[in-house]
Image 1 (spheres, rainbow, N blue to C red):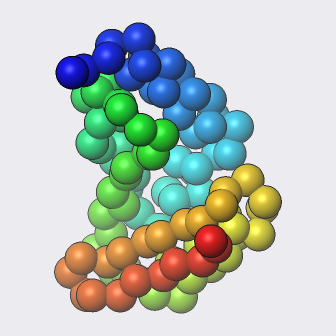
Image 2: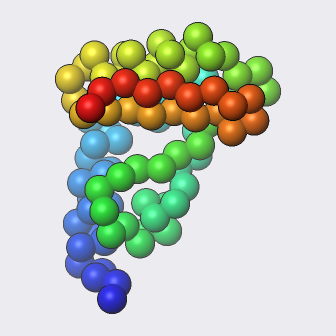
Amino acid sequence: MFNEDLADNLKKTAGEILSETDLINIFSGAGKVNLVGSYRLNLMSQPDIDMTVNSKSPSYDKVKEITAQLTDSGKFQSVGLTDICHGFVAERGS
């Protein structure tokens, strides 16, 4: 059963995380950022934030750089990025 109070609390926390970590700005260096999934729909049932970054010229080096920047900040347990068009994955953390 959907818990609206939980969804509201999770979205509020996620919004604070987005603001405090400057994630949208960090990812905008790689392309156009779109928040998607349960965050965008206000249907969160677990603490995760899904986003897409659309780029006409994706760079694996840029993805590795962003992944390292986020995990090295100490604010994230793990970061996983996937390029669904070119098949590369970058993951760091636990």
